[in-house]
Length: 47
Image 1 (cartoon, rainbow, N blue to C red):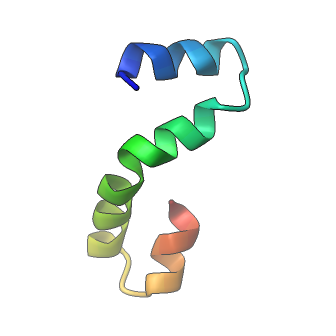
Image 2: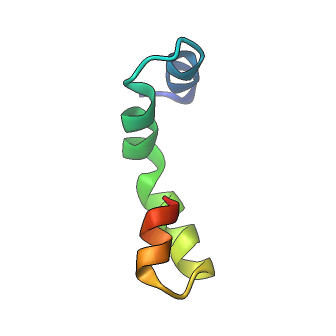
């Protein structure tokens, strides 16, 4: 799903927005959180 479609889901308050964003950006965000937070559990909670 492209970014515009994900943003449209958020604007529509559609429940599918969060899973769509997590699918597309979850690994990327987890990598960033993992490089900032030393505890893996904290990084997982952050994402």
